[in-house]
Length: 310
Length: 163
Image (cartoon, rainbow over all chains, first blue to last red; front, side, top):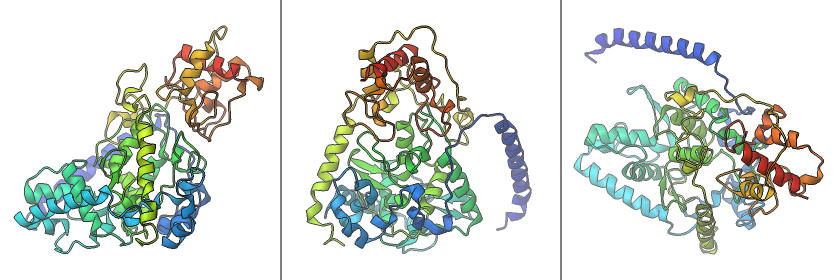
């Protein structure tokens, strides 16, 4: 607090610099030809309920709760219909009593407890002052007014490891993924609540929404090319069928059978990008953080389902 | 919760493993599949970044490319290219002759040769579909260098021979 008066001119300078950069970027962007996939109206206030829109396959009715999944369980293994379940039958303990997601969770719990015992401030940093971490991860990504940044579960773990432990648990590293998975599992069954009332979150959401429709890479694909009904959603795309982006953020970080490892949501973005012959960005990249905010708002009100397997 | 999706579904992960193993066994890892087959991180194409140079790269504008001279394509080579994941990968979205696990988004092309489309039109559409449909999801294989000129000619010859 004591240094606050000295920070103000710095802030003013930083703001001025930001405006200058923004003005430049606008001037430069004006003559750059960029294509976007046709946009679809999404109401961020609806959260996961927006998945009932025909533009996204109208699949919510099949996977929104246990009863719906149970009623349509005959579709499992049927290529024609399985995609309508949005793979939600693999969430938490629905798929198997002991899938490898639990092994990853065990590792994460051990790692977290080891460090939290050695340095209790690691726990309070993750909890932003609280020692009970239950339910906290359900409100991520969130804006942190102290750090003046949008924080994801993974960037929080990285930040706390740096500040409390002097350890480098970089986003995307095994240690970060394991602790993030453990932290998020402490919110299992808690409905996701990204704060759409926050101006910073909504600015990030809007940037992320724009990225969702941006055509990129050698294939000139956007996220929407695969994940809207006018594109490949619900269509066979080789042996797979792209599904709705709604509800998807709820099960990350998740155990990927094909990888034999945990994967964070942003690592999933990386693989999506590479498969569409697009430069993959490092986990924690501001663009991926915006995309994660957009994706997680589309999971609002849907329960966290960690650990899961895909 | 456990009761609904418990033991009865223990086969599902196994099926998944089999399906994913099948995918992994496909040739042409994406990181090795760019341009003329050399390794690439795709940074020469537009990307989602707001900080890296690729975030400022423009999309290539739609073109209606003219076919120079006679087609001179090899249908047998074209069939391989169209079915090859690291090359044309037409099969990802289209039913074509020789297809395994074809996609369902694009039209069935197994009898394309009976449609009465000219070589010129077909070449221009595979080169870049956007001049006809700006919102297409079909990758512009020509302008974005997924296939070179001869490979395009081979694919067109394959399509025209599909009867």
